[in-house]
Amino acid sequence: MGVLFSTWSIKRQVQLVLLIFLVAAIMPMVSLVLDYRGQIATTKQELAGMVPARAVLAAISTVQKHRGSSASVLNGARDSQGKLNEAAQEARLALATAQQIAARSSVADVLSKPLKNAALRMDQLHQGVEARQLSAEQSFVQHTALIDDMLRALFDTTRQSTLLLDPQADG
Image: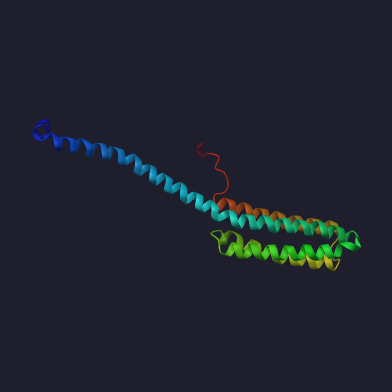
């Protein structure tokens, strides 16, 4: 090899050295680009879960508001019926919005069924409160169970979309 190399012109030797240098420099750069592409894919997956997660949180908030209004109505506050109906309407709208957002998202398989069930349960709860078929305690327990189920669906969403922090992550 040394004999072959020594017979080459200076120009050819410089070209070979530059070629070796370029190959040595390109390999880490390719690795770096591939790593960044992986990070971008992970970030996109996380972002895809944020919109449905926010919609579920908004729906949970409205169910909590309905729970409070239900307690007032069931404990005899006569002026609370309007607030109860307003809270029910807000909950229906928030749940419908969350269902629409979930259906268009990458977490549809995780959220669609729980949100549909939550909407049905919310309607049943509201009807039960309006008809005074539930005590304040029963209403509280059932609303809280609904909220717990919605939080569980939210947790499943964040897990699937990698929004949860990895305890083994670098940094």
